[in-house]
Image (cartoon, rainbow over all chains, first blue to last red; front, top):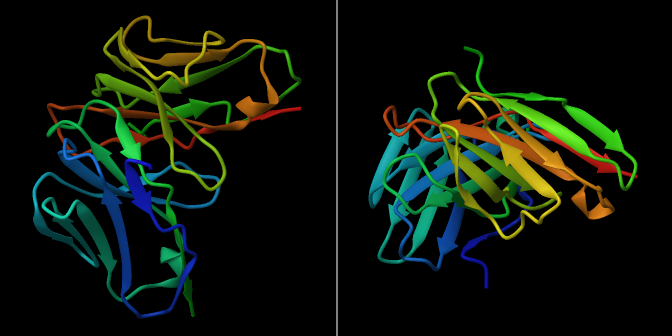
Length: 113
Length: 114
């Protein structure tokens, strides 16, 4: 069993819809949670990071962490075709931005006009 | 500063040849990481440096792989005697605990071993 599980998709939504992405994890030692967006043949781009359980909002993006259930989510409101990409969750063992990360396999999202 | 820079962007090599990749991190970031990503998978950790010290290496990093960060600035990743299974995207990232804010990745070097 992988430490971080993520549904590979593809997840297809119409423009303007809410995109809902999630990851589950098995290692309770993870302290730091991130979401990355990756376009084809490009490096991952950091979208959001958080340390604690609860919600964190940044523009159209909301990250949610539930440490008791070992579950994290990313919501994208008012989705646009430019949001079409692969979304990766990542987790770290420390509460600061250092040390290795464990990534999910990524969920491919397609937003159709 | 324009972010994390990786060179080359693409590399095609014959099996058995040696290759070297370079990463220039964000200048004020003292932590530097190498990851490998294959199609349909998330990045897998290879190794990381704090300044010039290599603090951790993955078991994925066989004896054919070596990474250096001689002056605590840029880093190189060398693969000796390449195999077809080495074909992947090699990603470099950097971070600064003092600044927080997560890890910044470069655009990667795509290696194809033929």
